[in-house]
Length: 217
Image (cartoon, rainbow, N blue to C red; front, side, top):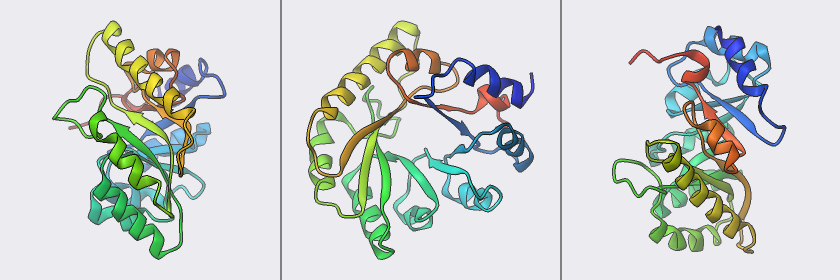
């Protein structure tokens, strides 16, 4: 199957409430062009430099930054990132507030939750979430639009367990009245588990290899 066929097979089963973010990490402009020609307008990048290099090639794309965000790279995303999926610390929040404030722009972000509490993965631990929320409520230039998670690898039962925990947390926040926090998006599910994620409440899925094939390492 080619790129267009792969995209078609995915979106054929999606409801309008679910957004497919096509992950373009390491992908060529020509590969991305095929996805773009099919109608995809949500691309996801893991590295700021790569997003910058590709940005002008696709002027009407909504760029999702989905990787670990280094504080010294935040300034390059102002006016370029539609949604930053990877807020995971108070120190990063402060840098985003500072850099977006310089240009009087709003940063739309998701809090990345380390739901499996894996030390090898990014994301904020649940024990630290309250401190982050308090800091977010004081911001002028950061708006939180929901949560993102990369769950531990496992079988279907394990996937469902972590997706359910994320949905429960998302639901709990949805009924709270926090300043600068609105639970619009729940970004979870990738190539191997996005169907399960959707069944458990995800409304943004991030798919790369399921569209383009295996990456060259």
